Image (cartoon, one colour):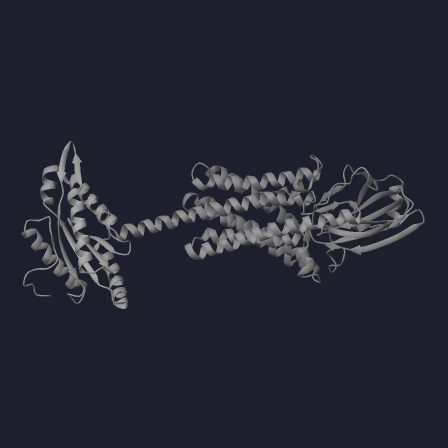
Length: 563
């Protein structure tokens, strides 16, 4: 999107806005368009301007979209109109973009002045200001030839799309204008909110910078499209004149902050980051000083120059990091989407390619795609961060070999199960098992085979019990299970199934068959007072099972005293 900033100055110079009017068709009433410029200290009135056009002291325009850059000159434009009918025709004249400070329009015929209007954003907003379109005037075009003289002056880039449309043509474009603007702003604001939520959840600064980047663009866009002036502060022309160009610099700074944080320049390119900080701070300071001093031309030059340099910087940093930071390639793609869209709008406005609604909307389409791509790579990176966090949490709470819970995590899970069982009056049962002759397996086949045995038994346990139950590696070859909502007989049956499954699992290593068995001890919550006593009782019964020949389950002992 920083490419949008880069070309925003060019877009201003070439009258890029979200206006969607079509070029003057061959059947248009406009015969020709001419213009000349004069310095503001030598201003002439409309009769003198008309005389200059009569004496051919003007330049013929090659297309109806006039752009004159930033200057302190007053520009006069003459639109020659020919109405071949015998009726007075109603037409809508678009004479300039929404940021023009002074716009005087005079409609003349052979007998003199027919209509005149005075408007511009140096005065309170009026009915002539149409957001996304420009300054529009209602002409009553008499039969035969007539002329429209337009006097324009602004300290911003002077862009004057000259269009003369019928009421039907004019009205047919309005829904497209507002629909496109609504889609653009709605998407960007939704992505802004999405990024803020991601920042709140993951505490990653670049999500917040992205939100500032998007929201500042929306503020900037509604400023130069005229929405803000028409709806928010129609009686504050001074604020209108300086707010948009100031926000342009703020938007560029937000873009630099996002880029720097997203591409990790603090770790990877600290010297460049320091340069960027100084560059952004100096630009903001200069812009603030010129704004407070109401030096409009200086403010405009700083604003557009800052955006152009910033865009080049972002492209260069993106290219440099494309092979070093995985996301930098997508970052560059996003920026190039914006650049291509703005390029399409620019050449469309210039008349290099046929002017179409979607061609002129290329800038908005480019920004839309860029915003989607950036939001996607931010979400993907944050998803990876969350995945790493979950993995780290899992590794900290589990045995790295068997992926079962470790002792600490088992105690936490057991505490929750005990609380739930008490509330619902459920029976809890603790099963403790020990792999038989495990030391011999390690001694005869190696510890790597012993690890395979542990993994095999752990997998059998996981496949045999509910996810709500807790399974842990208790130490060495010992494992424990805490199960709920089963009576004594169901637990005994479950334990026998586990014993049989382990016995039936044959491990083949280097053409050798290894028989694995396990001994079990079982304790129940109705026999003891707490988990600690259940562990002691289950361990006691496990020891008894091993002393009785192993590969068996002990859930009660003859003459056993309950702990």
